[in-house]
Image (cartoon, rainbow, N blue to C red; front, side, top):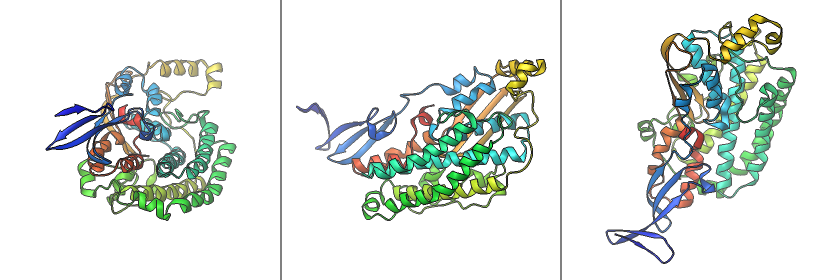
Length: 403
């Protein structure tokens, strides 16, 4: 039986026990995104939770059915916008798989540099926000300067910072400039010291540890049942990473460690992301030091936009530019799936082509959408403040969740 209190709160009486109904979101700042959780509270303890999503659903998959393959890239930007270049490159590789295009080794290494920079930026957001939600704001403000340095690199590469639309089917629109390489090397040289300071502030801090150890735990077995992937799965002790299990983009050329946790709690998720940042830094440095010679684009003129200077001076280039932008180039029929290790886990693209100028069907496998289903189970029996930390450590991105 439900009754209304003088304060407007709804009480639900179950077996002579009254629970308060509390709306966490969709516009609460602590949710870090536009989604809602309807909580049944026994004082400060969460008895049950019902998630409501779809507040910013933008029908990306339907939009993709009406756009040429080249024009789908900006849509992918707006999935996990904290690491949008990974989304862009994952989509490009999916189309290349359909086309049977083999990219030069140099393109692979350039893509790895961009994707690992994006992974660092993504993990910086997640782990600094965990600090904020425990009351430690300083690390957030300091580390966001490092995120800005990564965005400076992206801006130098393509002119954009957050939603980058970086790269093209077949490779990149231009080679890394001397300025780009300089910015990357400066980042590699200066980041470790500043990152150590941030880690020293939180990792072994007794207050921080007490706040997040054993908060929002999930076992490896249960995580697999929910189809977890990425840092949230590895924190639960499952050694799975798309870069290793199904190598793409020449990742098999690199020697790096996959960090895993044991308890699958908020502290493990924090530690796994911290360790992954260090591994990404090593991968970037190795790729830059061993950058192969060659072209920065595959040999696929039917799908790769010609250089702007050529469009202005060559009729052939102008024709290809028009055909590609307007979607006048038909792709082969086929059905492919390609996945990459995104900031939050396995980001997959299931593409069906009927031979036309647009995808017949495109489905995004968004890791957020999959693992967020476990959130009510992970916060049951915890306090409200712990539920906020659990959400932050899962790194739920509303743009990826709703698509």
